[in-house]
Length: 253
Image (cartoon, one colour):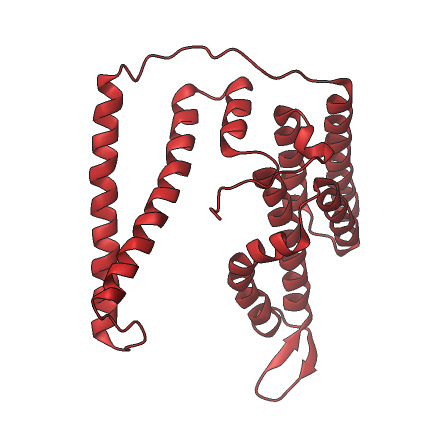
C-alpha cells in the first residue's frame, strides 16, 4: 500500500467537510506542540485517542505506520534522560538518570505520539486529492496546490522505480548483505540513478504540461458544503485547542 493511500470508512471524520476537518485537526496539532506541562499530557493523550477511535482506522494500520517515525524518536527519548539535566535520580556509576532529561523525554514522546496520530488521521480519512481541493477552496494558491499533487505523485513514482531497480540488481547477482565499501558505492550509484531518472521524467512531464497550456490560473468552483454539525465539530476542536493553550499559559505563570 502506498504511503499516501487512504483508508475507506464510514466514520464521521470520513464524511466530515474536508475544510473543517483540516482546520480543526491542524489547530489541535499546533496546540499539542505548545504543551510543555506534565499535567496536560494525560488530557491531550486522552483526546487524541478519542479522535483515533472516532476515525474508525484499524489499530494495526496505525501501529504499522508508526514503526519508522517511532524508531527515529525512540533514540532521542532513550538518550535524553542520561545526558540532559543536573538533578540525579539514579546513579549507576558510569551513567546517571537525570530528572530534567526524563521530563524532556516524556514530553517529547507524548507530544510526538499525539501529533503523529493526528496527522495520520488527517492523511488517511481522505485521499490526497480531496485534501488539496479543500486547501484550494480555503485560498491556497493554485501553484502550491499543483506542487502538492505533483510531490505526492512523484513520491509514489520514485518508490516504484526504486523497487524495480532493486529487483534488477538482485537478479544480476547483487549480494545486499555484503559489507564494506562495495555496497556503499553501489547504494550511492542507485540513489544517483534514481535522482537522474526522476529529474529527466520531471522535465518531460513539465514540457508536456506546458504544451497543453499549463500555467493558466483558473478559479475552481467549490464543491463542498458545510453542515451545522461540521461547524460544531470545528468549533469544539478550536475550543479544545484554546483550552490546552490557555491552561499551558496558566500553569506557566
